[in-house]
Length: 267
Image (cartoon, rainbow, N blue to C red):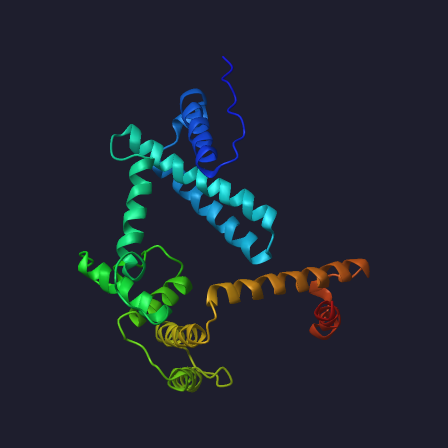
């Protein structure tokens, strides 16, 4: 049986309804879509989110558009499954986020006065606690990658005033942690390293660097991923040039590889 294809729509509401209609049909007629559960979709959603963030870093707007569509499909899919289980539906989801935004923006929808972005963030955290959140940190997902989690933890506690106002104090902490790490784990000395203690000290150093980046307005996850991409591009050039000259990396010296690496840097 062939189902009718919903026509393209040219308003946001109608286009949203079109996607819901298509998913409703797929949930009935497609064996793969019919089989999916929230649990089976979970890892696929994570992949889609990473693909979206990659496209954002690349500033590839055509790809961003595609990935946003994939993510939106997943969000509606979860709501569809919940509706089938009589838990909630997409209307409940949309109204819930609308209600939350109104409540969390009293400077827009009520008479609360704010001076700047920091006041808005502080109000947001204060309202969350009034709503019943047991901790300022309760909104930080346990499953976040460690680097992202550190940034979010620091940002959250700043919202209730637990932060340095003076950036120089933040950098002093970085230098303090770096000195402690270097003094205790100096690779120039042939000594056994306590791996557990070294890992703990390195974690402290990394946490303090992330904190300093936050004070500079740098998102450390974005910064590190840009460096990853830059390294991959340069190393790929190195591999390509070595192959062009009939060389194998394992047989090359570091100085020889540096010639191609420096070429890549100039490119």
